[in-house]
Amino acid sequence: MNPKAPPGRNRPGTPKFCGTPKCCGTPKSCGIPKFWGTPKSWGTPLGAALGVFVTLSFALGLLGGPLRPSRDPKPDRAAPCRPVSHIVFLKTHKTGGSSVVNVLSRYGESRQLRFALPQRYQFRYPEPFRAESVRGFRQGETFDIICHHMRFSPTEVQRVMPNDSFYFSIVRDPGTQGASAFSYFRAAAAAFRRAPSLDAFLAAPRRFFGPGGRGAGLARNPQWFDFGLPEPAAAAEVPALLARLERRFPLVLLAERFDESLVLLRHRLCWPRAAVDVFAHNARGGAAAPSAAQRRRLRAWNALDWALYSHFNRSFWRHVERFGAARLQQEAAELRRRRRRLQERCLRGAGPVPAGAIAEPRLRPFQPPGAEHAVLGFALRPGLPPAERRRCGRMALPELPYTDLLARRQFGNGSATEWDDF
Image (cartoon, rainbow, N blue to C red; front, top):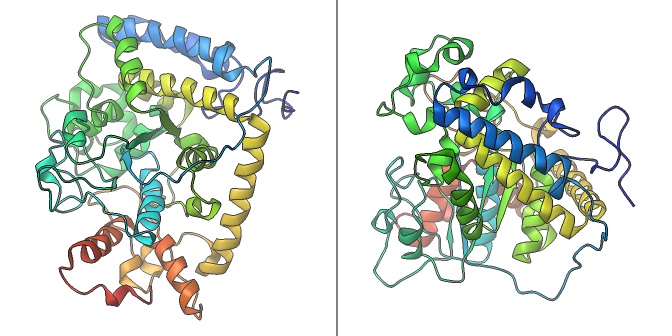
């Protein structure tokens, strides 16, 4: 039986929730025919061809295939499984990856797994990943988890991770990811720094962007860049590149469906429910959602990211169909209820607060220079019992200090006892 659609939101016969914001029924509801497929919108012949390819493929995904309930809706049921402890997570930029890293960090630390850690906080990004950039790397030795920022290189990752590792990642609609990146990377990306505003940048992006400029990989098609994919010479190459990528990454999460993604991930990893309880890290205070016009322009400028996102949007809904939409909704709702209880129990204000309101220095998130909006963090409620304070503290701990903690525990370079009450 099909899930009941809320009034005015979904077409009859489509799942209750869908993979892109405000994009549930037809391509027209996404604004696709009005924008995609004109050479003027894309700026280059390759861009125009990509526009046609993405429009058709995404429309097919919306109207048939992954977004249409199965005629024989028999969801997968839990079978006996063993917890997965060899994990490759490709952390893409401004997609919710910091929250996933918190999940992996807590799970790995609690089970004394070995992390492949960068010398600092990223693996020499934007250079392609090299095994030698892993702290403590020795030829022939492998680690259990790798999850920090890199530009993916499969052969090099295989040098540090076991052959049975589970690969996954997360993607986000470039219509919103691009706006977040523009705000966050104003100092890191020269193209963003030169532009007085997002609207000015989108009106003439080539005026500000140069392929060899500093931070170019953050300013155009950053998710494609993070996956280490080559620049296609023609749009016809894109489907094969993405099909090959999906074989490497059998599960790719959607930022827009983060809780449902966590449920699917938990079942793939055979982890307990509490393992994926997480607070939303790196939220921006006061950031307004991009307008519909800005989203269309961002998708056009990041055409390869839009193709990548559309591909993995469809693969996500195939996972949903196999798992069972009703079952997934039920487990995602329970995950949200647990999060609300944890926030009320753990956090002062029961949610994120400005960094200036956080007394504990270790809980203050990194603030990127030049960012338009401050990054929010979490302040613990006073008087928590020691065990609860430790659990809440780990859930609230930002990525950079958590990386420092993991390095101290793994390599013994300095005492980690200072974290025992945290």
